[in-house]
Picture 1 (cartoon, rainbow over the protein chains, first blue to last red):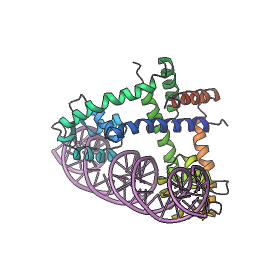
Picture 2: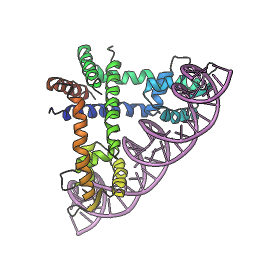
Picture 3: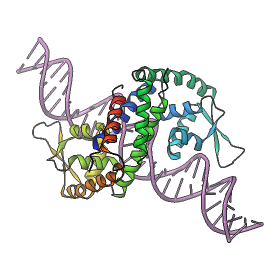
Picture 4: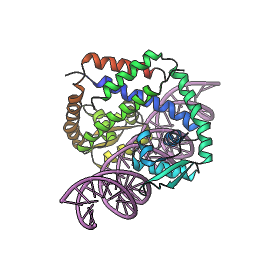
Length: 138
Length: 138
DNA sequence: CTTATAATGTACGTATGCGTACTATTTTAA
DNA sequence: TTAAAATAGTACGCATACGTACATTATAAG
């Protein structure tokens, strides 16, 4: 039997290292990771349903409801009725939400860029391919 | 500027895919992921401090307290005084905890083995190396 | 030896993360 | 065409996840 535990450990530790690195910066910008993901997803769009946001951010709907509640309380998003389907709701950024997007999205990308520049395009591609191979077994 | 987003997405999606795959099986065994991690860590040992468990399971101490509370309520672990350092506590598996370890640890490894057998030793090693390279930038 | 600092674990508050149940609406099928 | 099945989002409960504050004990500095 092959020993897959080191590979597994590497996956978990690397994910946690990234999550830690990224979320600290996001918190310094005044948002949680979930809130940032939603703002980043809605930026430069005309709005989206909860289902679409959940698909992009990988959040399950139950979690998303809470995140949207808090973003709504912060007046960064609004829920408006979807005329095409009365079951669903359209989520849109408010003016404050747009400003938050402008103030946080590019800065966070820049922050990540700094460390990712340590890797070449070739290396990034190899890592991605290996991750996809691992992903394919689940 | 290099586009690192696809690599990042692959990391997040792969981690979530594994987590989902693994935790469903653990839940079917009657434990949460955190509880399983603690049981697995304590198995075949003479007990450990919270600090040591946190180190192995990558749980922060605040989280660990709650997980241990619930394992204690299930009578799977006990907290005993550490004679060498009165600040700390030794966590030990009870007889039920040992039984749970025996009933879940190897079965879960076997469950994971099934899918990891789709990858060769060479592939596993390459994935691990790539993950470590990615980890090194954070 | 005494005090300042560090380490260990708990308490607590906020925010996910996820499963199940539920309401409202839409689509499918008989 | 109308009842059954599927879909969208919310409500709710439980278990992390993590930061800050806290009490207790240990160690280092003087």
